[in-house]
Length: 280
Ligand code: PLP
Image 1: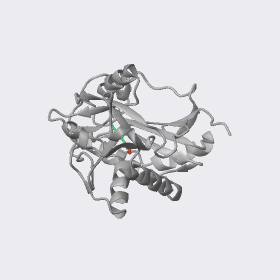
Image 2 (image 1 turned 45 degrees about the vertical axis):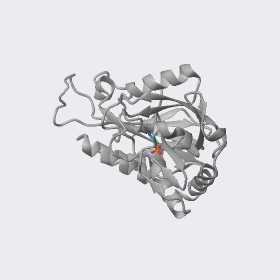
Image 3 (image 1 turned 60 degrees about the vertical axis):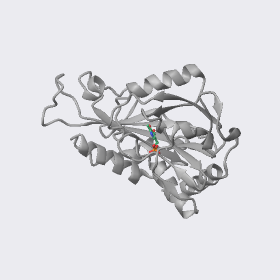
Image 4 (image 1 turned 45 degrees about the horizontal axis):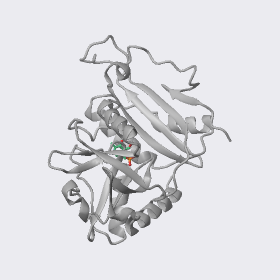
């Protein structure tokens, strides 16, 4: 069945042609907005609670009133749009007000949800190549803000290099995360991923994989993988709601682990997929 191009704007299901955002919306003018993305498989919204918890937590931190209707709005949109497989993009901006940096006290947030059809790559099926860039983003990468210009700049470099992801790297060579994914690296019997210290987005997928790895007997350490140790990376993979788990086989034109898809990449990719089939 074809997905109908619908969205849900402030609780109303509308066609994309009908939906209109006010030019004074602070999301448009300032990027004063947070977002989240949830996967939909066979009309089931996966791990909606975890994504909404992250979104609500972020909104509280930036002092935007979290709408209470998000859960219902998502379900309403999946039904109306007949979305089978793809994702929902949810965005909550602070709302509409005369343009001034400081927001007025009483302002009603704008809530936009898009239903997007998307075919996901099979687990561990896509050999991904990346470039690294100095991390020129800010110190609140744990907030999933729509102010993504720094990420867009990295993604332009990625596109021009003809690769699949940009990895942001700290001044000490700590490989933090991808432009839209988290990174895991196996060194010996330890799986490393950057700590959730504000320098990365604490991915929902990252959290699930850390638990799955521990349960399967591979200890996980929130230690930044280091660029200078890349020859010791025995496998590396990227993860995210849209990415799933995919092997990272090349960085800055050099192979990682001889471009071989590692056993833990494969195992965790499959375990995540099994979890997807069971989750609601
Ligand atoms: N890191 C960044 C910067 C992201 O944009 C994303 C997802 O879009 C992720 C990590 C992965 O997060 P999640 O697993 O919650 O999708």
